[in-house]
Image (cartoon, rainbow, N blue to C red; front, side):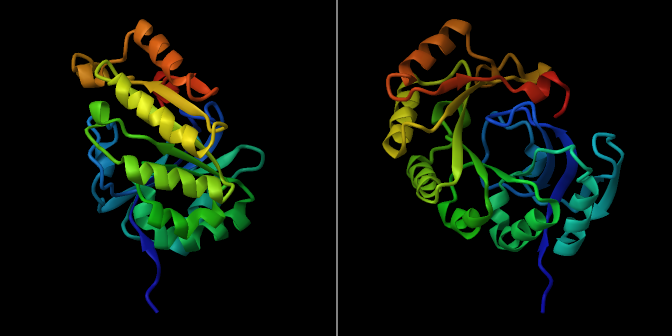
Length: 258
């Protein structure tokens, strides 16, 4: 029988910088490979599977050791368990890349890692792979899904986003939506996103996340933070549809935890 393996980028302990879990301590398990090419992506090294991965030895110490990919499931469980020091972490973040490209692996890994660590499982995803989501939904405690605005990301996945969000809601899995905004954001797309979410449930929270560009790219309008008056107007527009529209920047960049 062939062992289950996955391509990893890294495992480390850090403070969550986005969404509902912002400010909490998490074990991050970052998978390699992504089928999207968002214009603002600050993790382009995750787009393709990598020959090696970086594994932190001590939570928060950045004492990484390099290992060859792919990684077998028992080895990954051992590494996560080593990170799981008593009372330190609030949850495990399954991230990427696009982690749902590893759905078959995750369907086996998630129930085992939850039983081992007793930590909630948080999935960070582009929100465009509903079929793969179905394979792992039963093992998730929270989903943070993107809605990709074409005017900002260059990607268009409205139908998949709608199906994905509905699956989370129907399964009674907690879910929130993250939308990256920049100076090039089209307000018509924000209205479309608000309508999409409201049609599933008006209790779902949307996080508007202003672009926080790296210094060398800040002159590109696609990567430049929107002006304050833009953010205020867009929040007001979306609150015509939903009560919970929160504006939270990428705090992990401010903390130097890329």
